[in-house]
Length: 66
Image (tube, rainbow, N blue to C red; front, side, top):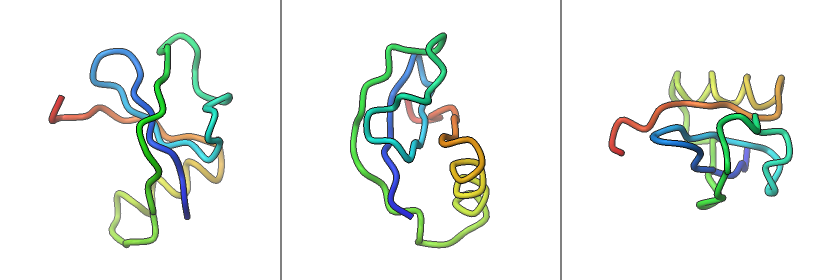
């Protein structure tokens, strides 16, 4: 699954199926598109992210490296 990585306020990040981020929550923006991401590498976190993107169009998370 190909998605887009966005940066929101602070350390908030989102994976979004829409390259424009139209479905991202506006209260946590402005959102800046960073790069494309391939979610077909495997792993539990990726499986959960794929489920959330399929269900809601996006998946938000905190970047612990920021």
